[in-house]
Picture 1 (cartoon, rainbow, N blue to C red):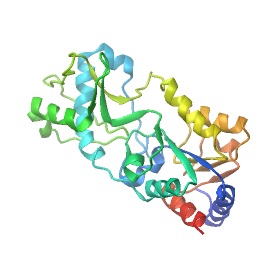
Picture 2 (picture 1 turned 90 degrees about the horizontal axis):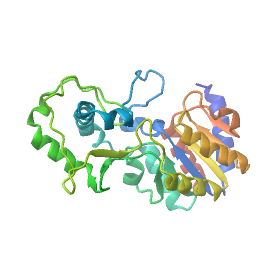
Picture 3 (picture 1 turned 90 degrees about the vertical axis):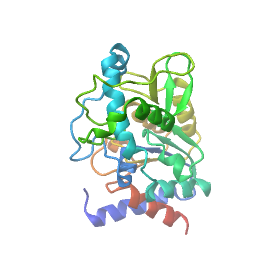
Length: 277
């Protein structure tokens, strides 16, 4: 992390770029760490092997393992609340400074903080989708069905939370997973799994938000995921100033007009306070 004096100088430079501008925001996992949701790639993050969509579709046992872990993780993941950084972005949108938030997160916290224009690139864990008929369900309703079908699930004790609300669970052979009540199809959280693409209409909505902005503000993302870098490249081609707020190195640092190496929450609050003056 950069020295405090340098960080303050870079923050001041970022505020000047944002002042009077129409801002598009791209957020990643670092925005939600202060809400108790671990970061995928931050310093000290455990090495993970996330389930791919191919594995999920090919194996009933894999689906049992996924739903067992996802359900256990959901109890803490679903109870997370927006932090000061989320609330600062909602405030900036309400004041007309931020045109909208594009997020790589699947926690739904921007919506719960009060942002109205939110594009969830990778979907949201609070929704469940039938892969056959397209029926949507509230995650809480599926969680209730899982508990009814598997009363023993609460006996699991080894819960290691992860950024997508998943955990590791070893014994799932007795697990019963609910099917779609409309057609009997396979249910899947309405999120983009590894091996899937961001839906084209969703990405185009994000790209349009960037195209209509004067500045792109990236907060809490290492920009390792391709969708984020594609949006950053769109901003660069349009010659928009790019402001990056993130602890540690990101793939976009070389393209940024200003990089603030600091935590997302406190920096977003400082930006919101400064732009109010």
